[in-house]
Length: 174
Image 1: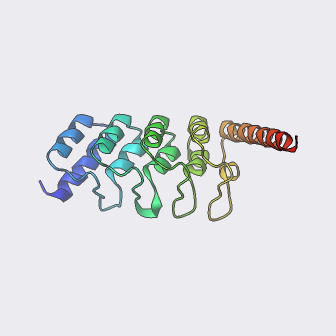
Image 2: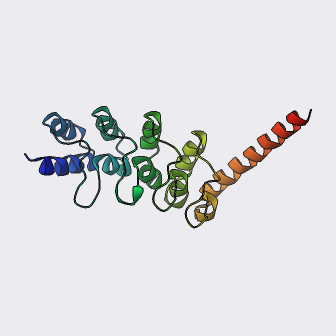
Image 3: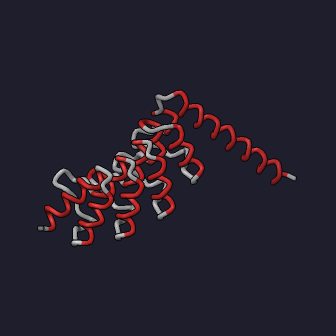
């Protein structure tokens, strides 16, 4: 099987969550870093589909956690947009940078606020995502959010940050 066919088959296997087929393909030499004609990669396909075991397999076989596809999308950013919290947690544990920006300037937090879930937003904030990050249009996660539950998570986090800042200022003055 050629690298091209094996790479495309690997992407199809992980997109479907077929870890045993993906493991077989990798064992036969399928390129873990292959990008399909549409620019997609196996890691991004598995991440957006929320297949934690497939993502783990790819990372264990040397997939670059920070590799990008067209538009600068990393696996963390696409997982955040899909609300794939289990995948996001694994990617962060494996070294994904929480505030990496894609070509439009959006971060995983901004994508999670736009398309993801409150749980995805909570995870990113708990793992150190900057709530103040903005995209190329100057919009932050709160500005692009359309979900009331996500908006409330962002507001609660901002309130906690302000409270901590006041405590630091008060402690510093004494």
